Length: 415
Image (tube, rainbow, N blue to C red; front, top):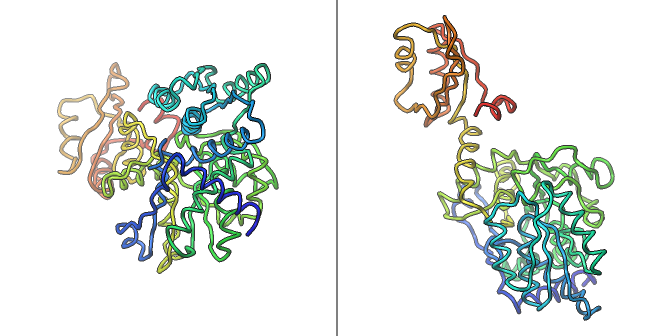
């Protein structure tokens, strides 16, 4: 057994003081859908509803073993890492200072406070994470505190490897394939390092959000590379730059095995898991399940483990998730219609709608035009094919319109 594997087992044993192994569950719905054995490693059921507690606890445990006098720990996070560090601080009886952006949702702030109790202080600073991170690191220097990285730390990676230790023990055999989400790379680094030593025949696929493809960029440039623009929707995996340490763990990865998941498609997966299975996943937590359609030919008849990495989902975001899912599935469209300014024109348009078409938005954009008025219209329907009939009817009637559903700039400004 490699030194890493041995240390990962020790880290896993230490976690048993805090919580039992997260479940490894065979999912009948997905198994039938893909004619495979689909297992979910339910990290969304960990005490802080994500795997992040593992790395935080292990890193803190090892720091205190070598330096018992270290009593102050610091992190910068807007979500799962903050909650994991808060939980670990209370467990070890040390003081934690957690820096979070001013824009952090109140729900995440309160959950971090609940997990940490009197053991943590929360500092809200910076509109953007980079500003928050700089403030946290400056605080560490001034206070001689220990900074706990969310992923770029060998001890954190070792702690995340406990996911793989449990997985192999629970399954009782080597899975054919493991599907892993990637943000900064800590989870993927730990799981693959352990399984390459203990289960060398297991293959891997890695999933990143389209708007946060840090591993893809690192592999393309032979080292960590900063992405110029990050889409923050998949907040648990929206990382602009892979870590130096995590890149060393993952530089062997075949770029062809790194899949990119569109943010809107992830919303479809989240709703399916919620409505069909009753499983609440955050966007990053749905990544591994989201790419199964792309792998359908490769996984048929095989044992596949998808790591559902987190379930910290604020239900105030549900309308946004539904909206994005509908757009991606072609069930909702927005368009600008040039409405003739004559009696009966509106009724004529309404008669073009089918029985399953519903007007979700109707707003005149230019009300002073003499001959035509521009109208922003949002339509929901039950089948994407219904829009073909609607647009065909509008064209035959001479109604001029522009579909702006996929126009990111216009949709963001008008919708």
